[in-house]
Image (cartoon, rainbow, N blue to C red; front, top):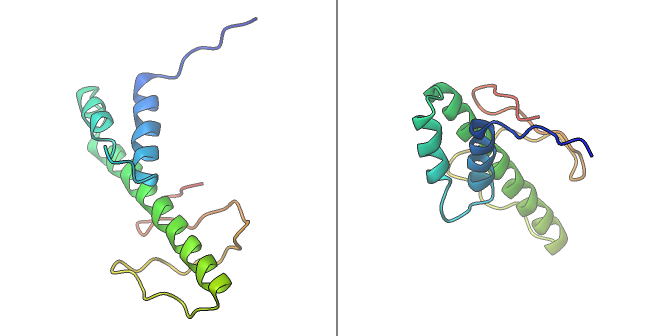
Length: 106
């Protein structure tokens, strides 16, 4: 069997940071944030990872709330304190909308 090369540690840290934020993990990816900074990853790249992860998390929450309200026969929930862009994808669609600053999350 051919052994595949490992992902670079900064890539692993970025994925872990994003997953921690998007999943609302209690540790919030702070360990990975420190690792990325120590590795010299530019702050604008770290900020992009954080923005994309938060956007995916918020988009997922909005879709879940909408689906729940539809099944429960309720009016749409009160808008979030930070309004999200209007979603134009169906519940089963694999695409996502860009972040408020225009970052692609797909």
